[in-house]
Length: 226
Image (cartoon, rainbow, N blue to C red; front, side, top):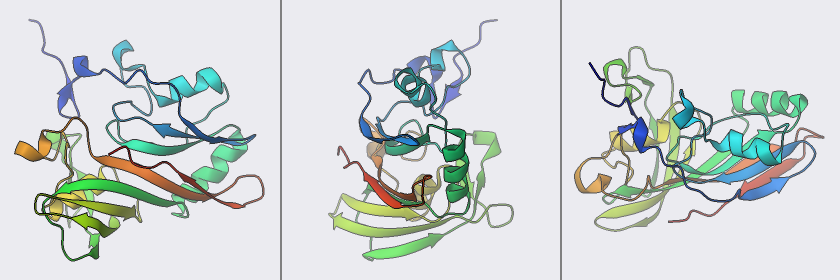
């Protein structure tokens, strides 16, 4: 009996059609390369030849020694940093592990988000029957903390800056959903009209970290395309 397509991120694997766009290099030197990942492109390859196209694969064509440090969801766009040496990978990996890297995202969410700023402190765990969805769970969830600030608010949607203090899977998406304001265009967590957008309206706008060679503080930024 033939099996139907396996669903990943709420869509069939056969729907994977990453954008055919050139590399958008934000910065590169002898230790690191920073890119602006487009929405719709996997950070790392999935299972199967149809999911081989990804950010790290494209990057290694231009920078053969590129090494993964962190990931962005397929549908999230924005700033990613890659190491070019094992030393840089270890150095940056420790910064992420110790939560020393400062991350800032921009999102468009459903409805008027109020008050003007706040913090979401809700533990997250995988929703096993519905994976890869995540969910809030006060019993088994891992600590997840997100600061948010409204940039612009209307009746139908708000533009917000999100500053995750932890790095849980789907953290920003689930935390916004928990507030009653799902991110627009989210194929997993938005419903109805909030889902009917051409992409997930979430963008990694800025990374602040210490350079692996000498520890100098650096800031990398790519404005949101929406």
